[in-house]
Length: 105
Figure 1 (cartoon, one colour):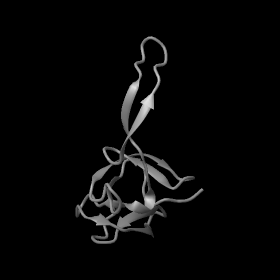
Figure 2 (cartoon, helix red, strand yellow; figure 1 turned 30 degrees about the horizontal axis):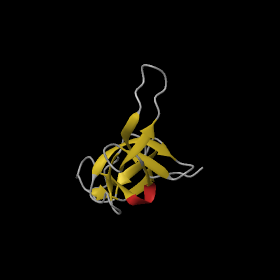
Figure 3 (spheres, rainbow, N blue to C red; figure 1 turned 120 degrees about the vertical axis):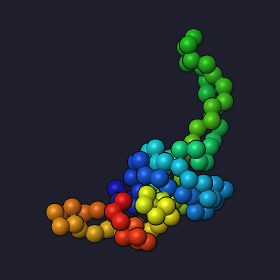
Figure 4 (spheres, rainbow, N blue to C red; figure 1 turned 45 degrees about the vertical axis):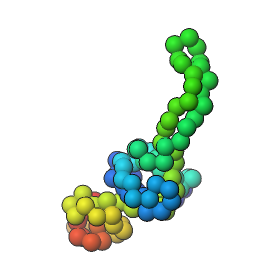
């Protein structure tokens, strides 16, 4: 299992590919695959069969997974996409921080 620089709930920006420049919130992270699903980014069309009388079939648009290497965290304080650093705080906690403004993420 890999450790990733992004977590569920982070705001990220896509840095390469067809969705370059788009921002969104991370909905799901899969460390074993090294991928993440970002809200409103990399929308794919899935063909769904109807399951039972209540559920309707058809084409459904959902966000698809992206490789984590294509994503950068957007700092909440400075608002820039940034690389992530790690440091140990005085109370012994390991935290992520913004490399631009040195603020904890």
